[in-house]
Every structure is written in C-alpha cells, then in structure tokens.
Length: 278
Image 1 (tube, rainbow, N blue to C red):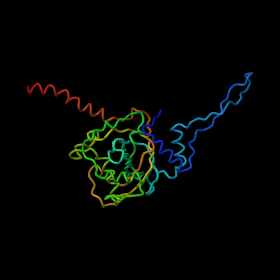
Image 2: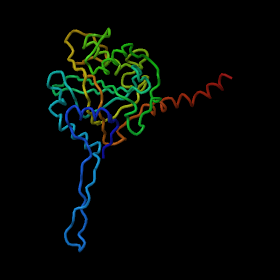
Image 3: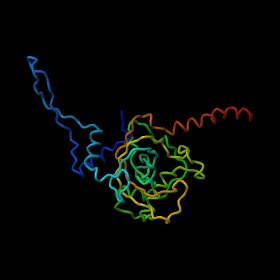
Image 4: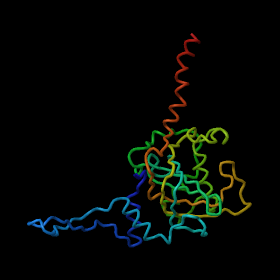
C-alpha cells in the first residue's frame, strides 16, 4: 500500500490544464437488484472523484513522451520521473522563507553517469505532517544565491538577471545548496551524516517521484573544479516536485529523531559533569 509524501494540487491542476488532461470527477452508474430478484436495474448516476493515484497515472500516461526517466536523451527535459532515495530539507531563501522545501534526488543515467535533481517546493505540500519546519534547525552555511534560485522558480527558468547568469553556474549553485546547506567546518565532518547539517529534515528510500523541470544542463567537461560532495556531477536538473510516493512511512528516516539520539548521551552526562565541578 503506497502513500503520498508530497502532493502539489496546484501543480497537478496546472499540468492537466496545460496539456488538456481531464481530471474532473467521473460519472458512474449504480446497479441494484430487480424487484422480483431476477436480473438487475440501473440506478442513479453518481460523480466519483478521482483519487491522487488516478490523477497521477492519467498525467503520466498523457505526457509520457515528454518525461525522461533513464536520462539517455539530451537536455532539455520538461518532466522527469523515477524511483530512488529522496532527501528532504528546508529552503530558507525566497519569499516563502518559512515554507520553502528542498528535495535532492541523486541518481544515475542508463550509462552510469551521475544525475542530480534539485527540486524546490512547499512544506505545506508534505503530507501527514511527517516533517515540520522546526525539525531542521537554522544553523550553518546557506547560499547567498537564494534570490537567483527564487527568480528561476518564479519564472520557471525563463529569466535570470542575477550574478549567476550562466546556466551551468546557477545549476551548480542549486546542487551546492542541496548537498552543503547547513554545513559547518569541512565537508568531511558531515560525510555520510546529513543530519549533522542544519536545515536537513530526512530522506525516503524507494520513493517514486515525478517532477517538472525548469532548467537542465550537462556540465562542460573540464570547466569546473568541484568539491568532494559534488565530485562527478554530470547532469543537473532543477525544478519543482509534483508528487512523491513511497510504499510505506517506514521508508522515511526523520533526522530529528537521529539528532535526539545523538544528543541523549551528552544530556545524560551534563548533570554528572556539573556535580564534578562543584
């Protein structure tokens, strides 16, 4: 049994409208037994609302040719989908500072090249209160390019008046935010422990995702000297999540719980240390 971790009703409606996809409630007939118990007769028609799964499958079916999944075809992609690990974090830049959400999907192409999707959405669309903004402490590094990212999102990739006016440069900055936001000290300090960085919320394994893409670049070989966390980056897609769906909530790891566990031994030692000083 699957469940949606993230669902943007507004974005679903816009995609359906832009592509002529009918997501209206469907008419259905009810059957009931005939008066003498022989045969059946048709009852009144009723309108049945489409489920989220129904809407998702209709959209995927209608725009399948515009959607990339193996990342074999060259940029630009309009939509992308796949299954894998998705990282959740806060994004404090832009006009909705308290509601901004950041999703990083690390994956590979069918040829084995690194592909990173950096998606920006709203905490309000995270279903079931799995993550709260307070779960991601405001601590550590954050990018000064937040306004450039905000412009990219608001214009859906059609405008860039910032200092990061090179498509590759801006895409790299988005990836840098995804993998380094909230860091303190060296990258090695946080390697394999994303919950030690500020703003991070958690991750979901075996997560089915569908995204709308605003910019899609393949990095020019030999042009960039990348940090360890970005080493090997090849193709970067920046956009917005439409939905995220996982098989169960057990596939979700909440970093707030990991932080509490890590902090518990220290808290237990504090009274003892104070008594020693007295």
